[in-house]
Length: 182
Image (tube, rainbow, N blue to C red; front, side):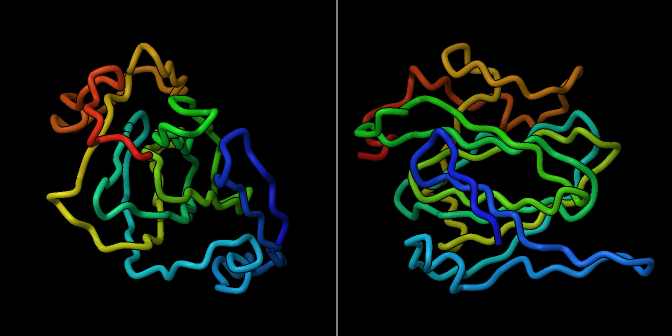
């Protein structure tokens, strides 16, 4: 397992070894001891899968009171995965990191608590699998608008497809103190 640090403290790219031959490939995508070696000691309690079509943007989402760490992988197609730092005490507060995750590059993105998360679909369609360290809690759910002018994410899509909920999320500059992590 190769680990690549990013510009956001705690956000890491994990690259497991994939064993490929004429039948396809095999790879391990999760082993608790990998994350423990990185200092990540929480348990993952929920797995989610989404299928989305090209130009879809999902996010930027996070939970405040029930903050979630996430381990994300694209098991079919290709996405641009994005993490935004919402930790007020962090030197990278308000900054983002993005990485292409695909079934071909086998990369995973680890995002600790304190970040908003989203992705855009770069291929015809994509299936995304991610693990969460806390259960989904609607009352704790928050978000930031995908096209926030302060964050300026290049989603690499031409005509974004969004849910009404995501289209109407607040701007980063309008977040209240109780919606930001310390």
